[in-house]
Image 1 (cartoon, one colour):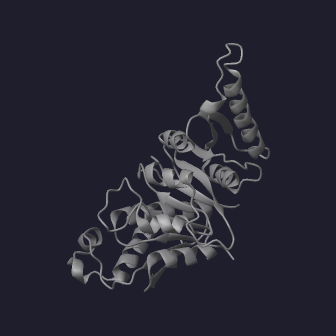
Image 2 (image 1 turned 90 degrees about the vertical axis):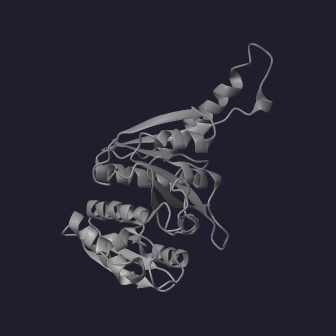
Image 3 (image 1 turned 30 degrees about the vertical axis):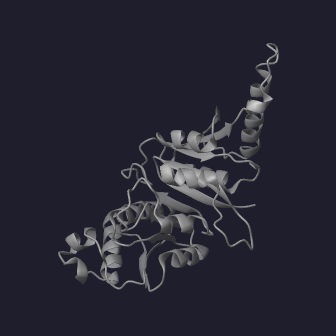
Length: 290
């Protein structure tokens, strides 16, 4: 069975941009698109959909929201297989459940809460910590499309256990679909306690940590597909800062997130949390086993 790409829609402008991105990605992969609206509220409270439908806000219903999103997706890709679902439950629970039978889950940066878009909405943040499939949060330059990125580059962060990284494999697969290059980035730090006053030894600690970063990159990139161009880069600095900086001229930023079976707390590390809030491009959180 071909698993669909699922996108959470709620009528807000960020969710409509996520719908556009998800429809491009579904067309690129040749898989169905599933639009899900989940809420315990019957009516919509906002303006974007109401203006499109020429209805007062209090007359816009859940069916209007998903139907409008479906029309939007079909206008972009007339041959795309699109289905819709309205669920009377909290969106975070519904989307996590949907992730169990999806090839990818897509959301916008925030919903209709009115919070600044620079901050990730609570629903997307919770879902990112529990989703069982790769989750894409569409943020940054929303003119980027899955089919024709403007930078021709996907950035993937290489973590502490690089060998066999699912995030790295995801980046390779996505680069192949788009015909773009991959930049694999490994951040490293020079702990202050390892500094030395001896002039002949002053550069040794830094070289040691940088060499370890280089080795981690090589371990992660042992099985680079022949048709994917990969650039390796090691950068001194906090991982979150390094990856956010790299996102400024990327079409997609890919990071892994450990999933611990039987652990029910928020399974989202500081790096993933930081890039979800501050990346300049869409972010993919890829579940990795701890």
